[in-house]
Length: 394
Image (tube, rainbow, N blue to C red; front, side, top):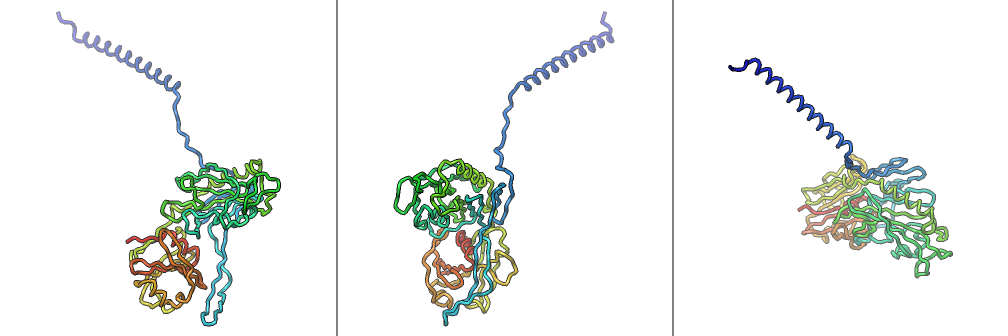
């Protein structure tokens, strides 16, 4: 006799229910065990290195930002330019308009007699890769107190080096501290006490140990950071390892850590017509190719590159680049404003040797390549920026 069909269904259902309950209990047990294991497990976490921050005021110009902490004061670097005309017949120089005061982009950050100098757009005159010590230290009073002739580039005394993190680029930097010597040396002074005193510090690229810190290899763009003491009295300089000096060097190093430069955001002007390019701050107003006029010193019927860093349109451009399809000797012969002037020597800029001429209205630079002559003239800081990044594209 066969079992009842409905009875089989009931047994099957009861069996399934038991299995489900057992499975649920097992799952709950496994879930609870996993939860306990997770609770007891030590989970590693990543904490990014925090950006340097402290109470203060954020300063910003077209080249950089930096935080000025409480107790420190900032002043902007300036230069004064006087426009003038020169009469070759009489030799008379006539001043045009009032002196023009321009900001350089550099800053002095001061507390007491301690001066932190930051120049995010530094140019060097020596033409030597990395520059010379005298170029970054010549104007510091504390250096003048120690070195009898700072321009000679003699580094007096001893030095210590300390790593300093900067946000300027990916290269590591260090702070080099200079101290007076305990022994008498030629061309170097020392305190009457005979003790070592601090007189100067500078930031250098650890890889290249340069005074001018280049943003990129092969380019002339650089920044300079120095620290000095505002006294020419060598006996008033802070002593090595003193509590005051240690604190002030630390504070100045912390300020440096907040600085960010805009060199990576600088734009590139490229001329397909003339086959050259150069870099400039993004804030420059206008760069255009424009026809020469009757007032220009060479024949019309040609174009030149006009540069307006401050404002456009403006009555006067700040710099210009002329390209002539003839050798430099012919350009100099025909240019009435240059041919009688004194040559100022050769200047190496970004791998090119430019011939420099000194005129009453400033310096003019010539470069002959492939039978063509390139002339750059105008406001000093603008011209330096062009020459320091100038290169050919074809």
